[in-house]
Image 1 (cartoon, helix red, strand yellow):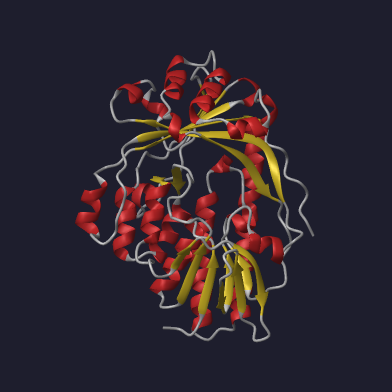
Image 2 (image 1 turned 30 degrees about the vertical axis):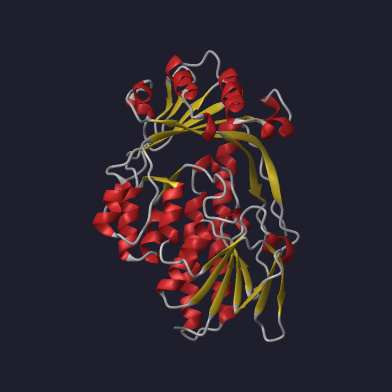
Length: 404
């Protein structure tokens, strides 16, 4: 094992993927997550994993865990079409298929299932209930992270993978801004346990991602998660040591609109229960195609939760230290092009490669600088592309000018 020790603040997908890569490379790593348990809060449902995400997971996971990931992913094909609110086709899009990748590089994955896969084998490395409050860079060059419960952890490098409200970013890059994009989303899921809900929508609306745009650029996003075999059969066949929770087919159903189109304040919106949020959604899609309204009406109320869309404002490169950032902690973006999670997974792959180089003798500062230089490029490109499509499609606020 290398003498390098890495402390990761945040146990989301990006932080866990980095921990997996470092663990496989024999580099000591500890993940400190503020939530008290891995399933403490709802973190979303279906996510799209594209070729960047698939390539990253293949590089970071054990072969067995990667096979479980591929086997539990839905393969809905490459279509990402846009319809009007009466389901007339507005724009047809078919993503290219990439030979050699599962699903041709277009997968629909249940977020909790992926999280459980990323946690496999990391039991001793992940510490819950550890909310980072601040850190110190020591005279020796090491970094000590301090947590709200009074504990601390010291490593050669601290990775801020602690999400959009990153405490690491606030201290490290206090001028980096995260802005309200002006959109509110209501996430929910429609169970596909029987055929009734599935039959409401024509098959062409069950592709990789379907956007239905209505008056005032209100929209509904639809994306199915359809498993090819039961979870317990997958793990029994491929990796008995990986424990996955049961799940069944469902349709991710997301309503979105400008904040001023909601007939309530943000405080009222975020105080609503699931049944109230479903009723609100139905009032905002009244008169839309009956199949779509029927699907929305079948959302499980317990599954529905609101989100404010936020976005980073790109910044110029900073002076490299023994602290760096990953995923939403540095480049949170609108979900308009569906690459937020994939960009975080790409971060984890690139940073793992650079830290392996550091463990092999490359100066740590040089390795971290190389990561930051690459990540800033593709990460903020994704932020800009997401903001541009979100503005055109749903009226997202334009991205502010880049920060110096």
